[in-house]
Length: 154
Image (cartoon, rainbow, N blue to C red; front, side, top):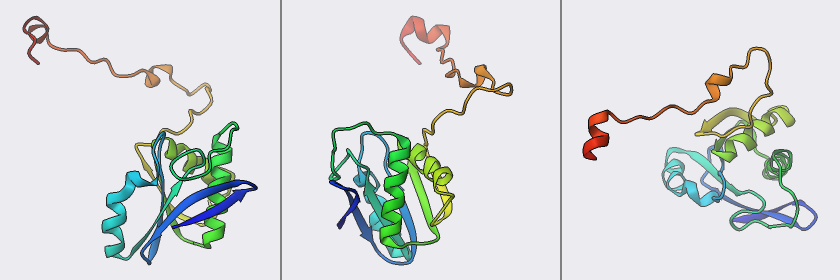
């Protein structure tokens, strides 16, 4: 367990388990690195190094009173990867963490990263253009059969 300073007065909490091929786990909102605790137990047994990060404002990391955005989270992630001096990382982002890791990939030219894993990712929406289909963004329509609505059965 360590704390890595990403800017003056802002430290991120980082836990590092095992050795071997590094996988960096980036949690979603409003979670922390602990959401991956089962992976941290099993994967090191398979020669996989697990690195869990609490993003700023979450878990055991600093919680500065300021705006947070994907650029800031991506820059924080870069500072952690630089400090740990890791290469050929598999970067795994869950939910909002998926947005963080995709922003990292574009903002920092995929530095340190060999593979990207998006786990139920909630990446920022691409801008609307002529090939963008609004209908594809609608949630599915969920309906129950008429018999189920009358009787309360599904």
